[in-house]
Image 1 (cartoon, rainbow over the protein chains, first blue to last red):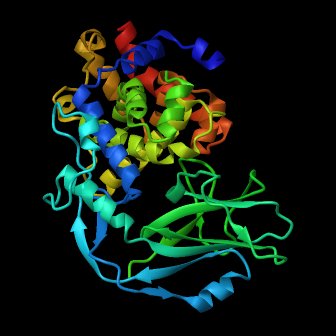
Image 2: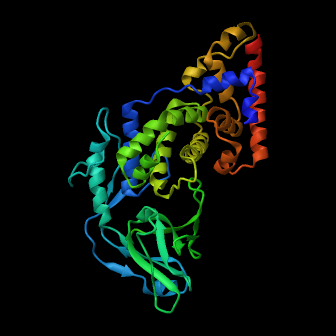
Image 3: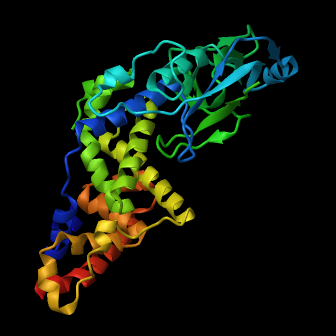
Length: 222
Length: 180
């Protein structure tokens, strides 16, 4: 590029200086990998700084409370509705890194329940418990004439084959209900395997990292 | 550089493949983040946050984009967020403590300071954030204007102006050192 080719000696010197790197230690790499793996497994990433990632761990599921009238309204066009579950007990879990020399594989292993809160093993144990606390959420999209509609989102790793919607015969309304972990989720519909459609009734979720907007749904805690 | 196979495996959740990606880019990311945040600890935090976000968004990554472009787009976002947070908390410091112990070059020791990388790092650190980011992405990390346009959402002419102004400031600050 011309601008780079025409760099004068001063800028060349600056670039040379600023390009110097220090090698990253194995422990640093392990810490980063462990944090990322754990966050992805949890499906939870709080934005606030200095706030540990928290997972609410259910003691047991007590009852379902499906908002039927909302579901009926949802059938008119596309949006997500949720059912909630009660009875929770909190367990704060920090995304923790392995200690120096500990391998990433160890840090990402599942742990037995009952481990002390805050330890890596406890974080992962509570994660599996959180899996049981999902709230059934319905997604609906009116798209007459579509050959297929799929739901993609952070909850299914944006896998277009994971969550197909079913069409109510002759209605052009597509829907699916799936259990989601409470929290904010970003999703979109994929029509005919290729057309990215945001939910017209849901808040838009801009994604400065990915560059393509999706829709946001907040699955509430009971 | 990472291979398509490593990326594909990491997309599916292969932690070892992801670790290879982190190994490949971590030092470079810290270099950029330190230039942006002027603090080693804050830089490492921002880089960790970027890799966390990257791994989470990886299933959506498509190889039509250069991987490092995509990663740096996330990292630049993290650095901007970190800078804003530091400013809000009143903790923004212009330099590392280490850098603060270095006096600004005086007229008598310009040539000596030229030999020190600190003068250069200080000059870059004193660039306004919006110029510093674009200067680092373009000249140090080697991204094209087209890539930076998509990365930052800033038009090409504005990007060129920022690069030029950053270079002008650096020349003004450092030319005396070079020719002094």
